[in-house]
Length: 67
Image (tube, rainbow, N blue to C red; front, side, top):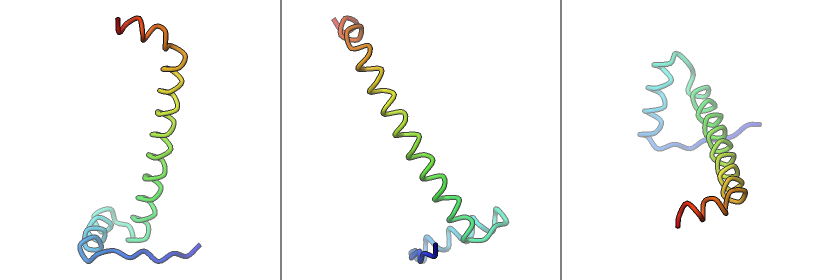
C-alpha cells in the first residue's frame, strides 16, 4: 500500500541522519519506526489486560493487604 508521509523539515533531517547512520533508506527507517510503534502499543495493551486480570483475580488479597 502506498502512503505519503509529511514531515517537518526538522523531522526529515533527523530521519535522514538516522537512516544514513544505520546505512538504510529513509523509507526503511520509517517502516522500522512504524513496526516498533505497533509492537510497543501491542505490548502496552497486553500489560494493561494482564494487570486488570491480576487485580480482578486477587482483589480480596489486595484489599486485605491495604488494611
